[in-house]
Structures are given as structure tokens and as C-alpha cells.
Amino acid sequence: MQKRMDQRGRPAGTTRYEAEPALAFGKAVRALRKEQEVAQEELAALAGIERSHMGKIERGEHMPSLAVILKVAAALKISGTDLMAATERNIGAGPDS
Image 1 (tube, rainbow, N blue to C red):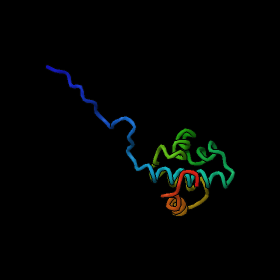
Image 2 (cartoon, rainbow, N blue to C red):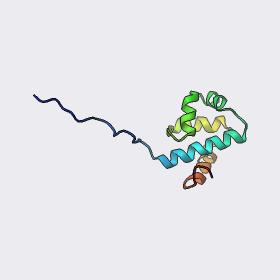
Image 3 (tube, rainbow, N blue to C red):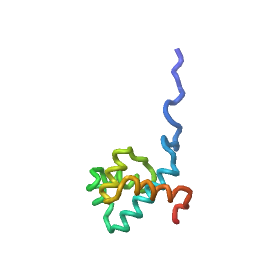
């Protein structure tokens, strides 16, 4: 019997989410956090998530669940609607704009 050689799962370097919205969301979170002069670690604690997770969100490396999005919005003292509006404004914008 021959051993199966194909690999399972996603190919290396692929993601399970749309990168552009994740980047736009992260950019919105970072801008709002800095505008409020809140450290990343503090925002993560207020939202009840790990600082490393917050870093991945801000860099667009992870698209959080709806529950986490709402926790982040509450930690930023804004509505989920306002956070999503800020995200939508960033879609299509360059990384430094």
C-alpha cells in the first residue's frame, strides 16, 4: 500500500478571510486608539482579549468575530456602527492614508 503524500489544509501563505476588510478594520481600530491616546495593551485589556491578538487585529492579520468587534468598540467607547463606518472609509485606502 502506497503512502498518501498530498498535504491537507490551506496552501502556505493563504488566509481564511478577506484581507482588505481586515486591514481596513485594523487601521480604523489603531487610528481610534491613538486618537484616544490609549496603549494597545490597555485597549486589549478593556476589550478582554490578549495584547498579541489586538496587535494581529490592528495589523490586519486576523479578522475578529462579531463578539470581539463589539468588545473593541465598547472599549473604544464608540458604537459598533461607528467602528464599522470607520472601517468602510478605509476600504480601498492605501496602507498609509
